[in-house]
Image 1 (cartoon, rainbow, N blue to C red):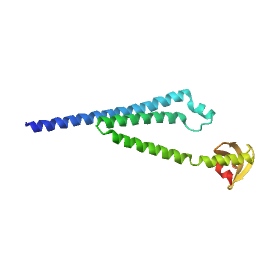
Image 2: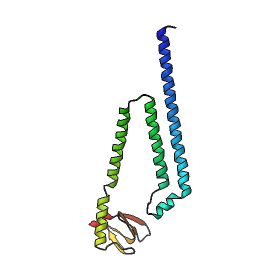
Image 3: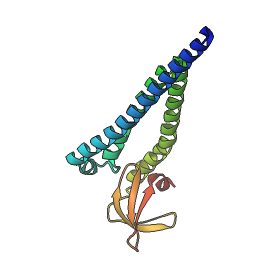
Image 4: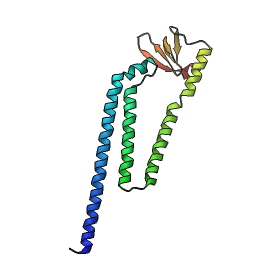
Length: 173
């Protein structure tokens, strides 16, 4: 074999080794993320974190939320290690990280856009003493008895027994 052919074979072999190792890193990282999620979920379930959260007024699945966030952090770290191992420049990683941060900020902004209106509705209803537990009210064609009043929403039980979550912004009108 010629010297050129040996160099090409060596290059192909080194790139193949690089790609195989990068794929191994990716598989190990994804597996670790999945294991971290399942183990953390079981640990939080054992502690009964959701019951504690419900008692403190948090109405979401906290166990699943925390375990998912940790698993996504492991996935993100794996992606950074994977890209670095392949020799992809840090500027690409910074672009990806910047895009993720922008996406998170926009998500938060869209999520909190109703909070000021609901807070003002709660203040208005509280000032005019409209929302008392057990009081019959009618708002926008919805009538029922106030079950629970909160800062952002009020729970109303209709005559048919259904629970309606009414945003407090409706009480400003």
